[in-house]
Length: 188
Ligand SMILES: CC(C)(COP(=O)(O)OP(=O)(O)OC[C@H]1O[C@@H](n2cnc3c(N)ncnc32)[C@H](O)[C@@H]1OP(=O)(O)O)[C@@H](O)C(=O)NCCC(=O)NCCS
Image (cartoon, rainbow, N blue to C red; front, side, top):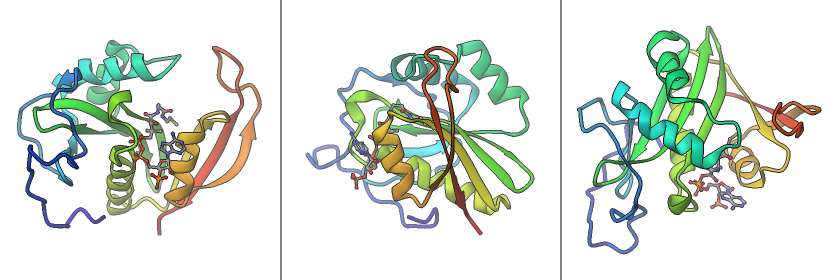
């Protein structure tokens, strides 16, 4: 998917629509940052400050070592290397996000998450694909990431997107000493 792809019209009555408006997710900011994609209902756009509570809530749901709201806020507002995209449902509920840091031509995915009730519908793939388009446009030549060895859904997603394993960090995660797989994708 290219960012320049035409925007699909949204049909809330369509049962194949990937986003369920009844989901008890987090209200996202209804302000008007630029849209990067709108496939079949969920909208991808850069995060704004008022998205931070929703991102923090997803962190808590999705990770055993979540970033706090304060850390996320500081990173979003004060870290010039940090970039955030959010996936927002029809009714402005925040259902996913991706965070990366980019310095010169190197980008590193810091986190990617989709709310549990919205998984398996292509939202993670779309966030990742928009991120890849964005870093390429910003002049990156390579994307790095670490992923837990046991995290098969994420590893499959990254492999499908063209990342390959470059190594392993033994006992990398401080809270449970799980190994990290390091992965890389060239984007030039
Ligand atoms: C990893 C995650 C972001 C995937 O999001 P998602 O929206 O469910 O993913 P998608 O529906 O876009 O699926 C894209 C691909 O991911 C892989 N995938 C997704 N769920 C999977 C599962 N349960 N098992 C195996 N592979 C899976 C597949 O390759 C899939 O492609 P396919 O449908 O053609 O098989 C989501 O599972 C999540 O938020 N997990 C918890 C947080 C996390 O672990 N983040 C990664 C940090 S490195």
